[in-house]
Image 1: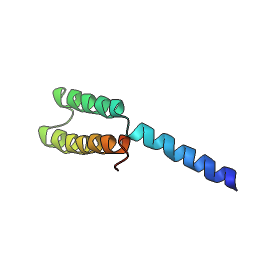
Image 2: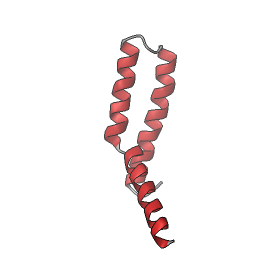
Image 3: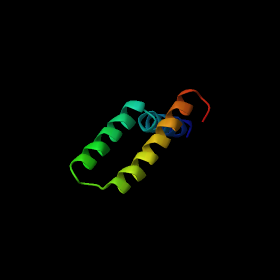
Image 4: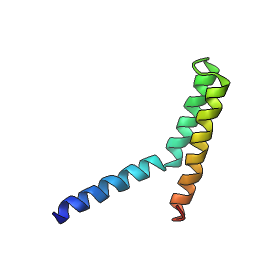
Length: 68
């Protein structure tokens, strides 16, 4: 039973590292800008998604500093 708990903690930690990785967030921002430039999304949708990603980037900095 202890092994299952350890495995779950490892999975959660890996997911957090990926979610809060600033490089992943920067790539998502770049992709978002590409979508805007190509007309896939409009300015309003760009701004909405950009706000979400910028909030996530701020959370990533807090997570990295242990303040989240």
